Amino acid sequence: MPDLHTLLLFCAAALALILIPGPAVLYIVARSLHQGRQAGIVSALGVLTGGLLHVGAAAVGISALVLSSALLFSAVKLLGAAYLIYLGIRTLLSSPQSVQETLPEPRRLSQIYWQGALVNALNPKTALFFFAFLPQFVHPGHGPVALQTLIFGFTFLLLACISDSTYALLAGSLSRRLQGNTQFARRQKYVTGGVYMLLGVGTLAARHSAD
Image 1 (tube, rainbow, N blue to C red):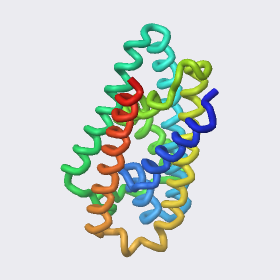
Image 2 (cartoon, one colour):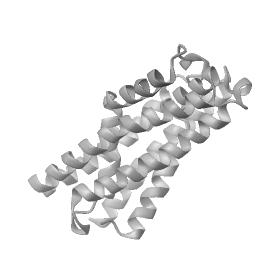
Image 3 (cartoon, rainbow, N blue to C red):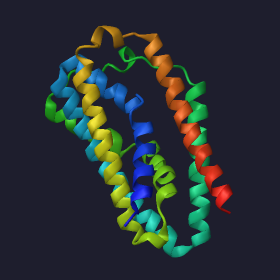
């Protein structure tokens, strides 16, 4: 089991990533703007369902790495931190995307749910993110690695679902301000990229000082 300090640190880092509006949030907000709050909530639940597959895959994969080689596991953690920095740099250099550009076609609620689940489940970037982020907080000496990974993964998804649902509920009242708002898109890009880079650099610094 993760200790309380590690779990709280993970929650703080996860919230820093979750609260900023990324591509998934833009999709959920677009659904809510286009078909109402209920559609936004359903899309958030679909994204959550797709994320469960990545958490399970991460638990199996990270456990296999620890059992096979401690050196390989450490290397994966370093590569994960570097990947977060790469995500930050790429986000900062990308063109901002507005909510209007992500506006989807109308769908039934059941279709919205399964579309959100499928999009997240088949997104290789989500899988890479979980393998880059979760291992930073896993300590083989704190208990079964698979259980730690599942706890961190479910915690992340729960926080993300709460945040995504809040965005969906607020999107209706902010629809006129968000649609086509270039300032919102630009700020989202810089905040997202900055948080990715800070998390990656912070992880590398912490590991360097511990060596």
